[in-house]
Amino acid sequence: MDLVYGEGVGELFQVQCHLYKHIFSYIDSMSLKCAIQLGIPDIIHNHGQPITLPELVSKLHIHPKKSNCVHRLMRLLVHSGFFTKTKVHENQEDDEEVYTLTPSSRLIIKDKVTSLSPFVQAMLDPVLVSPWQFLGDWFQGSELTPFEKAHGMGMWDYCNQSPEYNNIFNEAMASDSRLMSLVVKDYKSIFDGLGSLVDVGGGTGTVAKIISEEFPHMICTVFDLPHVVANLTDSQNLKYVGGDMFQSIPSADAVMFKWILHDWSDEECVNILKRCKEAITSKGKEGKVIIIDVVINQEKDEHDVTKTKLLFDALMMVLLTGKERNKKEWEKLFLEAGFSHYKIVSSFGMKSLIEVYP
Image (cartoon, rainbow, N blue to C red; front, side, top):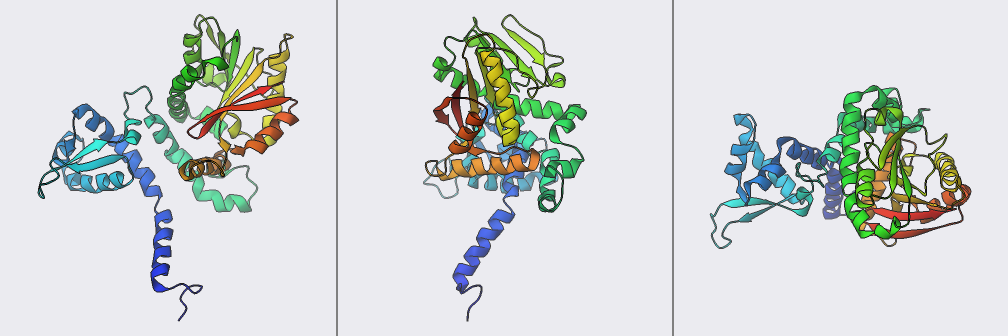
């Protein structure tokens, strides 16, 4: 007897398991957020050695009646690769088990310069999670984005009107940008010979500060919306300018975008890139545009890297009007904006470093 489209009983229940895994995959995300809220990675790190469950529970600020649930949270997080659990002495059956950090959980230790815990908390905030409930309705409606359907306004307007979430979001972007110090040091040649650089959408200046410190002769400008840079202070070779990148961009030898253009539609990106070309050629020089962003390459990327890029593409669809692009889609933007050529210098993780020339 056929069950579902000719599948046998065993296969049917495997398919059911696959379906359930995806239905409940949000629990992985929320468990990770919970671990950060409780400070679990920091507790294990500060403990200085593998930690037992009773030791971990004793350091958590939780209700006593919830203590017996900690092992269930940790069991899931271990299975997801955020912690490891081992026995102190492998040969003893009843020996106590201990938890240690993994490379992934080391990346969310709060007092580390490269900590991404602010990014996790911002992306899993109800402000960004609730629009997903409206995705199906959005496809059938006229709203620009599911975010707009959920909140009655676009994301940038929401950030402008909500200082609390704006601070959360800016710190999330800053936490991602702090990893840029590694890129700057590995790809110094990208910035060699530049006397000036504008970081468009540079937020609170995390990347520009790193570059200005590494290249003290270079004048770096952080260019962002007025409310983003309003209370930020200039330094010797770093200044903040408020404005609208769709209208004009300050002149410089190079204009840089880190994870900015994926926020915008193709038409909007072409407009922005045209302003870039004006900015890097206005003084008779022919500068360049430096882009750090996602380039989808399903043929060459590892499965997990591609999956992460596709998830970010869906995120752009829900929150903004942007998208993640493949090489041909990037090339089309550059040519339509009047640039002559480009090169993908390198790829690291899910991002690529691109140089674009007039």
